[in-house]
Length: 269
Image (cartoon, rainbow, N blue to C red; front, side):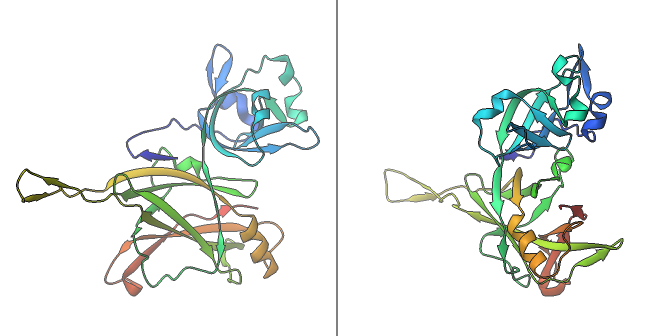
């Protein structure tokens, strides 16, 4: 999902299901948590396809037509007076009415750390979680890491995202927790072709240069292969944190002239 940077979504992430009612906007006893990341999956023994969200599991029978494993941005409303929600806390999920949903592209990781000493052809700087309206989308749902990013690209171009890692890496220790690195790179592809205006004579007028525009994007990273590979090299079964490292820009005083940023550690499994 690629949006111009000036387009804003209302984001109100407010904790887990246990605190759902007290934190949400109430309109005539119906609560609206705003737009949140969501992953479709079967919950427990229920055989129901539900949405896993940062607020917990929610169910709308309209989700039954979807496939398991879809990544979305979803809005929904919740009515605590609905008799079906009387035992929601014990059951582990709430009945809701899902409103708008937006598909989120799901990306795969690739073993073999990227070469951090050079830029890639067409590469642009990227800033994960830089837009305050999207920062709360940086969450992990069942080994799917939702990543909001800000970047500049030419209008009409498309982006290729590369996510690589060293499977045998030694984790960084932060507050006694192992933190593993995942490298994000953004490559601009299918750049718009320059056009020229041709008059009735043989003269050709060059087209005006195209200036890059700033975009916000949200995608989800499937971490299953990444987690399997680092565990095969000694990572713990649980308690794994990830930092996403990204090319922030260039600086002649930086190693190899490249500046690498990093996100805060995030628990992913």
